Image 1 (tube, rainbow over the protein chains, first blue to last red):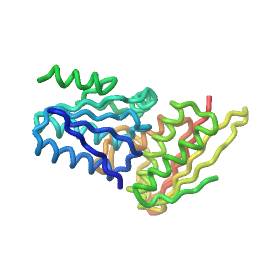
Image 2: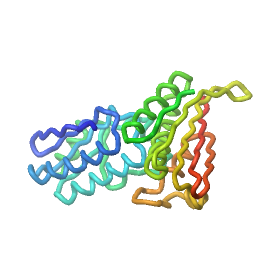
Image 3: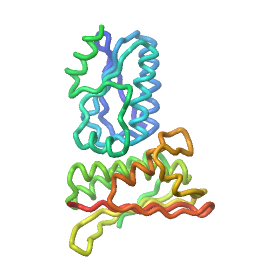
Image 4: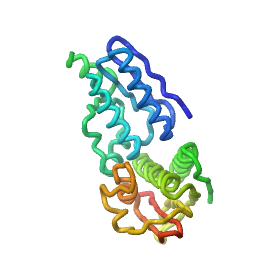
Length: 117
Length: 131
């Protein structure tokens, strides 16, 4: 099982998903992020999915849950870098990722988080 | 025709990767590939989680009017689906998911066939045609 690294820069946790995720890896990321939020008191999470070729209903649900979990730690999650084909497919699948913010890229995601604090 | 076992989460990833390669090689656009691979991911997970594991088969097919398509078969010998209409309803779930796996993957492909009987396993066959 691949582990997705989490990097803290300032008040933000950065996650860049670079591997083809299997379900256990996504669950692991969710737990690692919750631990990291509790340990660091970070105020924001940026998840970069530029390299992610598909988001199915399981991964989509996990991203939404990461948003909800972050909120319990007073942090906001922004998903950045979604590919156009992924956005089209997610919508047709019936997933809206409600409850998480999205932005075009990491820079714009950071602007959203900085505008908040 | 390629055949892959589905016995673990890693196998689900391998099915996705194989479907991606074959769809790309046979002229499906990036959006079509993404839809088919996403459907494959949903169906392979169903085979693993609900069917207790099984087999995925991938083949290239040609329509009567000459279009190329990719056909996927997912077969398990699990408990089967008692009410197929219900299982294909958006939002209906047998577990903790969103209930979009089966109904959503049907929307992502051009042809969708589900055969299941309680106690006799489940087979899902889908086709995505190149435009």
